[in-house]
Amino acid sequence: MSHVRSVDTPLSAPLETRYVGALAGRYSLRSPLGDATTATVYACRTVSISARSVTVAGPVAGAPGQVVTLLIDHIGFVKGSVVRRVTGGFQVDLDGSDYDRKKRAAKVRWLKDHRVRKVPDKRATARRYPRVSAASLRLPDGSLHPCFLIDVSSTGAGISATLRPPIGTRLAIGTVAAVVVRHMEAGFGVAFEAPPLDGRLEAELAAR
Image (cartoon, rainbow, N blue to C red; front, side, top):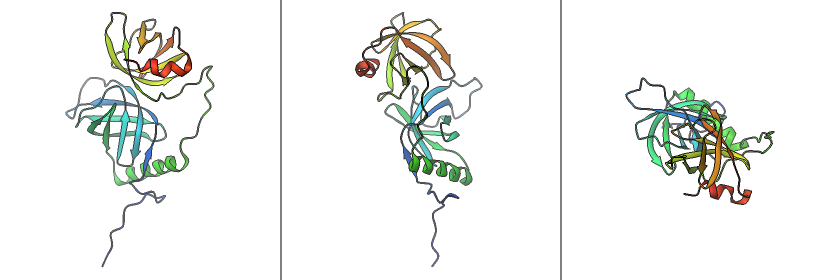
């Protein structure tokens, strides 16, 4: 009697191998029917990833059926369709041939075995991923908007949202007053005007 063997990668990494952890990335969403307009790019972080699917946290949750393109650190460009929303993000079934999945599985296994090598941050104040990424920003007109904390330091933060205020705009992230100092492909950077003590920073950024 013949036996069916599971498909392994050239490095013998099972396609079911999953890395659970944060990898920085960017993504854009499009409707299943396509869209002639330029897609907006948002920042995201992975919650988990395998050769077949990825779950990400980001500022805009895709709806089931939406087409999403992602660029993920250590993985590269991937494309797929949203299958369900989760708290703070969504899950994507990834497209690709068997060969594409085998290559992804090899990368995922490497991440699982070796984790992500830490690269020293040479900026004056090192940035880190916050424990809670979901926050809200208040504009000068008093309007509130949901946003995603890309990274934070003791002096500023990277923000991804559906809007991009002009440089020089004063606003609040949670209860922390800040000013927009730069624009990025997937969002904008702010400098804190009077940052709280580091032990309170993340709690005040996430305050509603």
